[in-house]
Length: 351
Image 1 (cartoon, rainbow, N blue to C red):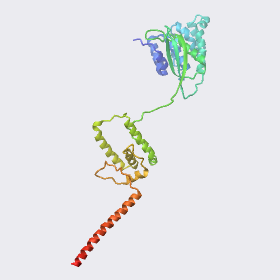
Image 2 (spheres, one colour):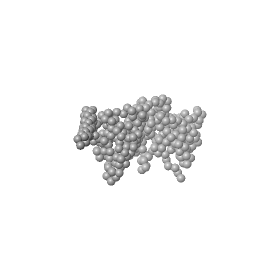
Image 3 (tube, rainbow, N blue to C red):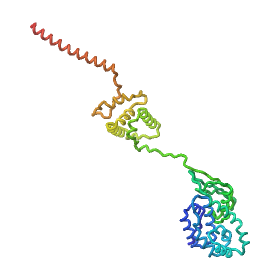
Image 4 (tube, helix red, strand yellow):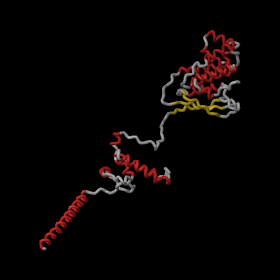
């Protein structure tokens, strides 16, 4: 079965080793030297524009084709790109195999040799390290004159717009890229943009079911204002209607949650403070930290664990007044008993 021709996506996105293996397998199955020579030229363009290293991955295969394969027009057109793969004697042998004379060689390879000098300059360029990724977004016209966009990822930073445009124009000399309908692509170069991209911002959705982890030192420094703001935020979110309520099991869940909160309150004073604040009404006055501590110190009834005492603590004046009233009431009760006893004694003596 004859393998399919490689696409532009494969030639410009695959890793070097995988791509070299695939092209070698293609040549063994088809023996199409003209197509393989064009694949090698496309890799020269990729190496000149991208920061990845694709140098000499087709060297052995290209040497084999130019030294042993039957000459054709594509080999004559693109042989000058690979002159560095051969020594002087080998290159003279190739010239005698492909061209009638030196004059024909210069005429056929005039454009290729100009592009080769440009590619050599790009290969010698030192790659600059950067925090950004650069992509070349180019526009070409196909054989029908219709524009199509082509993007090459992870490219070098552009220093000369004209030179990059000339490198892209090398693709117009290749006939291997076609649409599924058979229309040749990259017929005419139009324009390109070098796009710089980086991670500017990131966001992760918070999971409401995950517990809030608080360090010991952070828990000790937790202020009343932070607890109040957290409570108000929970109430507003529930009132906004974003969280649907299941009315069927509301009472069961409320009793279960309150039991768990009371059990946790006995272990953690910070949670105890929050549970009291969450049970306050929105219209209630702000509660001082001293009042909260006094509420936490009061023992809760064992038979009614779910009830919370919302009564306002008594002031000192009220406590003193009640204390005096209690003393007066005890004095009155005591004086009444003594009076009744005296009357009995007196009555007894009288009798």
